[in-house]
Image (cartoon, rainbow, N blue to C red):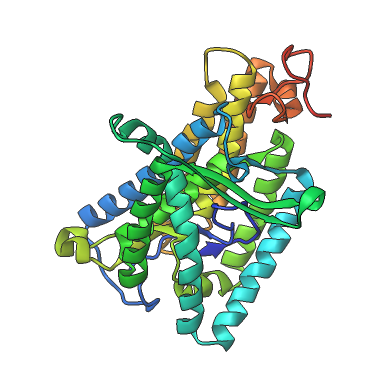
Length: 383
């Protein structure tokens, strides 16, 4: 796989898509970016890549399920951010500019100071993302005999009729507990840069991305994935920009797992890596297909499971090709055709291809997508 990045702005609490978009770096010390060769054992390699695949599947599966939740959010920051076709078309251009800008920064300025600033930035984002991820679990685990007090953080400007809300955030004791636990993980990451803390933040970023970034239709998803397919191939095979930035960038924007874990335990430092972009980008498309399954009002989840299996196939193929040719590979080169092609073939066979591409998303009645009015008597789809 290849060291890839992409960039654009995300809603609060979600990592920017300038996340590593694919990677496996055999024999690379992720802590300092040096190319120290390490010959891993077959068992260590299998454990590392098996763990990465499993970690990639978790945020996609649970993020997709959470993306179709109809529960009303008490905070506007938890509402999904919809990606339109215009956003999708501009995304690869913004990503390329961000990637090349980071490349120049690392070439001109001290890598140490840049990564210090990035650590502080992702420290805050990581705490928010991990708190949001833990919230449903805390709701179940929080003892019923303990008081759960409600709080509100309100910032306004002006007075009287001209008063305007800037921040209106409601939270409770459960949220405070999540915040405290996340802060401990954040401090651990900043001080030690330990790979376990990195993965906790990375999984939270990925799950939040899949949950809160919504494509408005399948056509937009095809535009986004198609554009990033070209972006990925160009920056990996055409230049050394991707690999340079990936090795220099110290932030929890990738999942890592040591190939020498069996030899060195938790102090292992020769990592295989998988960028969050290879999880979030296909993941939001898979989540869209799950919402399409829901909109059909059938008991089956055919398109979700088809695309989910396609993702596993594409990621496995990426690892296979990488080890066969001993060269970094752009994962989206394999993930995009699989994640789009498999569901399209299934839709053709079932005669639902037109319905799939007519899918629209609206949030006035629920957070679920709906089919055009003829298919959904409860909510009118956005034009």
